[in-house]
Image (cartoon, rainbow, N blue to C red; front, side, top):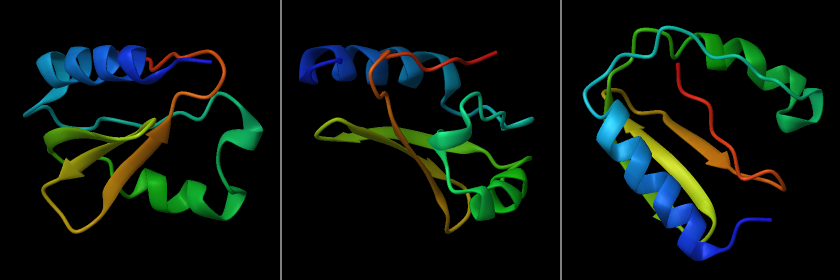
Length: 83
């Protein structure tokens, strides 16, 4: 499980690579990673622009150009895939 320094390293890497980019799609790789009822709202984030990548403890959140935010936790693997 990633600790705070690893989570901050991921945040910095995401910040360098995704700030100002648009979300073209969201794919959930593990069925328990999200509530099935929340998958449709995730699809509605397509086209949103990422304004910032923030961290609170081990949680990462991406501020978008809309009221919603994208919240993520690295879980046990410590991976966040950006294509």
